[in-house]
Length: 246
Image 1 (tube, rainbow, N blue to C red):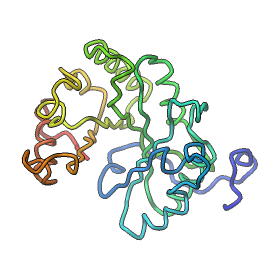
Image 2 (image 1 turned 60 degrees about the horizontal axis):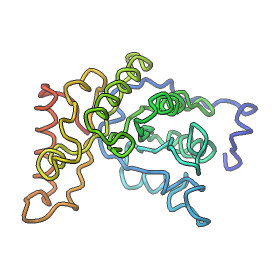
Image 3 (image 1 turned 135 degrees about the horizontal axis):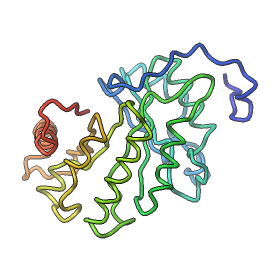
């Protein structure tokens, strides 16, 4: 395993990896987030990544059940559809061999929907030694690609509908800005966010609830308060009191 490289994958025997049913289970329980600035060598400026496939051992020891891995990125440092195929392969195989689930995520820029779908399709189809991602999620927060919020929302809805069509019945995750942030703290950030229009395209919602960025005076620095209100607002915005929220 330590010699695993992408070029060698076709000549290696496939793992006895379980077939992947992209359902809701990977989104349950304790998870940890890893982005390209953590693990991809091309983003380190010559240094060593702070997170590697070997970090999986610590994740298991700490009780992690799911790794949310940024597997694609629009950046000249990672021109391939998958950000660093060899690093991603090592991480995916080691994590799943250790019993973890791995959900791949991608940040669409929305200016070029075909390009965004190409990246999302690449991570959905990525396979090494019989291992595939346990889920695919879309990180919805980029605003500068389409500055006008109405046009941006239209692009996001189109992307989501096309992704749903491509994904069939597989569970899709929506990594969204916390409603408290865009409805209370800074309503100008993304006005009229299209919750209802997105509802048919996604099965589970993952709000970026960074309570440490909130002030004590607001009351939202209390993690329980912040999370509770975000979950309630998401469900109200979607019109579904039972929608899964991670």
